Image 1 (cartoon, rainbow, N blue to C red):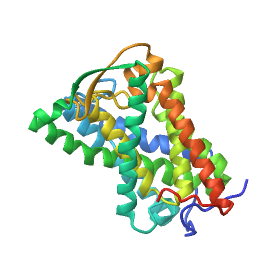
Image 2: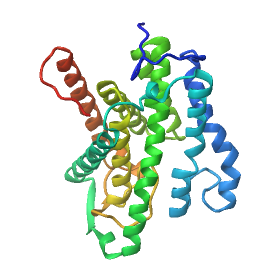
Image 3: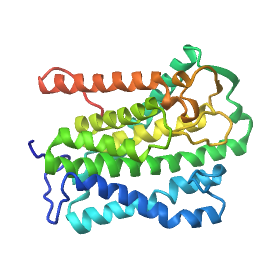
Image 4: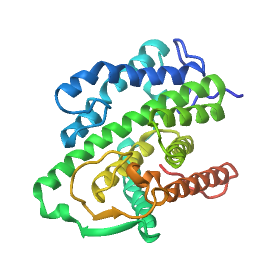
Length: 304
């Protein structure tokens, strides 16, 4: 396999972990803070013994406190052990704010496509239009969740599509890096008795995000897309996002699942639906076609 320095040619002046070791380190970067803070979070009533957030306060605690230590561990490893620049893990490129905001807008636009497809297929029933607009306190809580999801999503992108992808690519090449990143992403989002469709959707989510960063050469756009997707799914329809409930009235349309879990996604929410799997598979194919056209010199502007 051809070893590749993604995002930036800045050298690693320290030690790069072997390709097989990097995903294990990432799991540890996630697991150590969770284990260390588990009792503390439960004592404050923010999480259950199983690690699920309790109410809106628990969701905020998960998104902010749960992800901050992992981000610090990853950045400390990059700077202190590998001795690499932040540009080399994807935090590079011109106009990062504009690129992030464009990705955020794409996230806002794409998750309703999945939800509307499930609705059109008979998997959802409307129970009210924009009930959150009748509650100023709900609108405030919805607004406060946006930066929380921006932080959580950005941390995940730095961990997986930034550090892990670039580290493994330097050791074993891009194909191996994409496979290991997506398997690690699926593993860390796995829960016991999870349906195969949910696992497939999670892996495809990662594959699409990998395709995005490989196409654009930075993390800013996919960070925005991930945040927009998660936030609007959490607050827009009164539906779970990755199995988590925001406990807030819908910003857009309150929907109630009806029918089988394969269509609705069940307790996972729309991300566990077969239609989300189809959407992500088509999005990956679209991204690959654009990349091939770009390499061939044909007009195919990328996601900046």
